[in-house]
Length: 99
Image (cartoon, rainbow, N blue to C red):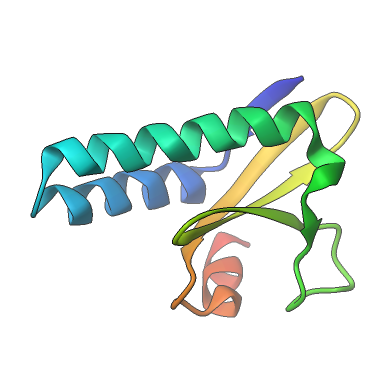
């Protein structure tokens, strides 16, 4: 299945890497790798994620790579990462910004 990262999700990944790298490049690289690997696993089993409770009317799903939520959409041919959200962040603002 093809994996697509939205502009917002790519920016989120860069931002979280930059934030963590202020303390440790090693741990920043490690977290980014864990998130990418989790996305790849979720793309192989997209139905394993659960619905995003803040938006039950949307087809959004999520998986977790502690402490982040990986929000995505999927079709039979594409897995689209919409945004990455720290558990302490509000999702609504991030989705409104993403469109």
